[in-house]
Every structure is written in C-alpha cells, then in structure tokens.
Figure 1 (cartoon, rainbow over the protein chains, first blue to last red):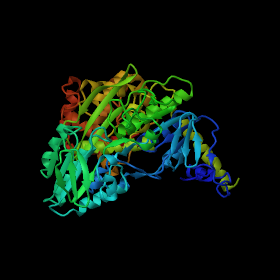
Figure 2: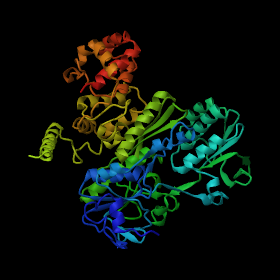
Figure 3: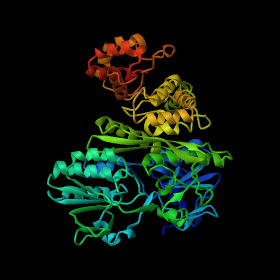
Figure 4: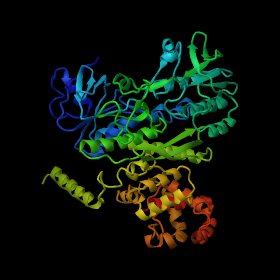
Length: 419
Length: 199
C-alpha cells in the first residue's frame, strides 16, 4: 500500500508550484488528501479511453476539476506495437508523455486506484481517498491467467505482449533470437478480447520477420476461435505471401509447460515451440471487477449506450475495452470515441442537462507487412437509446496507401488523446 | 521604461493582435461540437490535421465539406475509409458538422520542400484559371480552396481526378480531366506542394 501525501499529489499533478508547499514538510496525508472545492471528475486509467475523457471533460467545461489516476508515467500505444515485434518500429516511437493533458488543466496522479466506494462517491488511493461527483473508469483489460494451466507459474518465461511495454520489447528480442528452422507458437484467446484483428496482424508481422530473416522457421497459430475473428478474407489473402504460417482454428490452448517447451490444446494436441507467445483470455480491468461493475459473466461491464454510465452503479461511467453489450470492437478508436462521448455526457449531467445521444465510430488498421495495411471501418447511430451499426466496410485489399492512411490515423488520434 | 517593461508591452501588444486576428472558435455549446467527435480520430483534434494524407477540415468552407460528405456517401468519391462515416454524418446533421469545422481556425500549412513549391508555382498556370493564382478557389462557381491542405492529400486527389476515379463520368469535369491527363504524374507533387504552402 502506498500513502499519498498532499505534497506528492501536488507535485505529480503539476500544481502547487509557487505555493510554498514543495519545500515544506507536509506530513503524509491519509483521508481526503485533495479536498474537493467544486465539481470534480475522477478518471481511472490513462489509456486511449481515459486520457481522452480527461481531456474532453476539461474542454467541455474548464470549471470542472479533473483528476486522472494512472500509475504509468508514460503512455505506450498498443496500436502499432505489433510492428515492434518485426523490428519495423521502435517502442520509443510509440511512447508519449502526459504533458498535453496537464496543459488542459488535467491533474495527473501517477498512482493506482485501489478501490471504489459508490455509496460515498470516493476512490481509494493507497491509504487516502478522493471524492468525486462523477467517476469515469477506463481500466482496460486484465488477463485470466488461471484459465491456462501452468501460465501463472511460468512468469516471464511465457509472454503475452498484449499490453505494449517491456514485454513487447522482450518478445521482439526472443523472435530475433529464434534459430533459423525454429518454431514460433502464437495462441489466440476466445472472444471477447482486446483488439479483434490484433492477433492476426501479429501473425503477419511475425511471419514477415521470419520470411526475411529466418526463412526455414515457421509460425504456428493456435486459435481458440472457429475462424479468424476479424477481416478473415483480407487476412487469408495477405497470408498467401507467408507460406511459413500454419494456422489452426478451433485450437484452444489450455496448458503451457516451459520446461518441455510445449503447449497443449483442449483436444490434447501437443505442440512444441522454440518461442511462444500466449495471449491469454481476458476480462475487464481488476478495479472494475472489484467494484462490482461487471455483469453476471464476471468479465465485462454493461453501460448505458448514451452516457456510458454503469447499469449497476450511478455516477460511475465505464469506457473502453472493459465494456460489453455495445456492438463495437474493443479497439483504440472506439475507446477514444467513448472517451469523448462520455466526457460530453458527464459535462452535461454535472450541469444538470440532458446529454445528446452521440454514436461512436471505429476504424481498425492492420499491418500485413512492413509497409502495407488494410482496414475495417464501422459507422453507427443511436436508435431508441441503443448503438446500432449503420455500415461496416473493408478496404478492397492491402496497400501502401492504406499504410500511409494508418500512420495518418495514428498521428491524428494520438493528438486527439494526448495533444 | 526598462527593457523588461518594453518587452512586456510588446508581448501584450502581440497577444492583442493575435486575439484580434484569430477567428472565434466555436466551443462546446455549438450544435456541431459533439457531432464533430466522429471526425477527429483521423482528421485531428478540431479538424486541424497534421498528417500528409488526411485533409484539414478546420476552416474548410461549409459548402465544400457538405458536398464532400454527400459525394462520399453517394460513392462519387469512392473511399472505403470515408463512405460509412459520410453516411453517419448525413444522419447526424451535415450542416452542423460543416458549420462547426468552418468556424475553426485553419492551422499553419505543414512544411513542404521549397524547391517543389517553386516548381509548382511555375507550373500552376492551368490550375489558376479556375482555382485562382494561389488556389483560393471560388465558392460562387463551386471551385474549392486548395490552400493549406496537406500536399500528400492534394496529390492523391489530383491523381484520382486524372484517372477519372473521382466524380467519374461527371460531364462538368471532363474538360478539366482531359487537361490533367497531359500533366505528368511527377509534376502533381510539385503542384501539391505549391498549393499546400499557400494560405
């Protein structure tokens, strides 16, 4: 448990300089370490959804105080991180600071929320707490490691690399160290999981790397699902360039054993590997589960389609990958859209106004080589208070032009989130 | 007056000039504010794209953004990445969205190669007949403003016109497309750089 001091909060949130507090000897604060002076929104999680929401609450009403709780000091993008595995991009090129949010007046505390108290409208942080008028919860996903025998015990011997960061860099290193002729095994979890096309983009990037650097090696993809989950036709077309891919549908992995370098499927098939990447089954971030925001499935959070307010607790909104029930994928674009729409709804609700119904959007670009990408595009409307899809469209294939558009999207959305 | 004092007065004056020069930016009360959320993931926060291939919506005349949305939705501008969103914007209310972006301040042009700008300037005479010497266009004649748009976007659009893949078969554009066929592909990058550099 950490004890957050008023001094530490003022320092890390970027306020307090000049007030003579930084040089003082303020004791460690318990209780309400940042008393509320006006309307306040607390945001849990500074990823694609939470960082966007924090910024857009301030844009919508600068009179609302916004405190963002995010343990990490830097934002590392999951989108494009599969290109770190293939060596096409560096992790540094996907790493950004939170300075832009501070310039909008968002107070950032690099601490984890440890509990939510809906009845008293408090978020616990270490031994202290923060009061809120509205809470936006954007905790991303957590892994259900217990669903694969041996995974928890394996520790860092078996990587997920499904939250961009040190694991991404380490998996890239292991891929690059694989002997020519070695076998890379990638496992795909059952839906629902973060980034539906992500495992198949990763398949392309690993296969691209092996084709050009370890031509005698192969990639075995063990997919828990009955078919490729997203853009199946486009991915199958792309994979024609990669005869080193051995794709096996309906092959749910239930066991991993680093000592024998072997995974086992639910049908008892054993597959040997030189390097393994297990993307585990997933659920909403732990804080959402602990705060009883998840539904009967104990995995995901149902929300109102217009305000993103939890169906279980008033004044608590949930956005991003933790949500379910809205016909959208768990993508970065959707999390960004939810962040904006939810922020606007929260500003209206705090102001005593009816929030306007606003649908999200989605685009998922997938990189199939070092330069070529393709995409799925979804547009929605609100009908009877629910999100419904207007249309889904695929790019006609893969191309370098779509790759350029993918980079354009990344640049623009990053600025929309953090700029 | 001290140097510091003079500097402060100077800065205050500059701030006043900037405040006067900047167009009034619509805020959260604008009916297009939330509807424009749909666009910013690709076109940038408030439409101020800083990306070579994605057009700037900030400051775009409302009539042209509305026409573009209608053309994308109808398939006259075939683009898988735009067609669903164009249909969505029509349902949300294209006038609100177009008016919102029209009121946003146009960002400074992205940097382009000065040599390409000069080559483009020298080759721009055929374009100037309709678009004007600097590419400001003519709303009365339905001629769009090219200035300040990213060069990559302008080049791609010109090549689509040349190949008759944009507004295909439109008789009002046939003479222009015939003219464009005579311009080598490489020269479009220069023309794009020139118009992109203009304000």
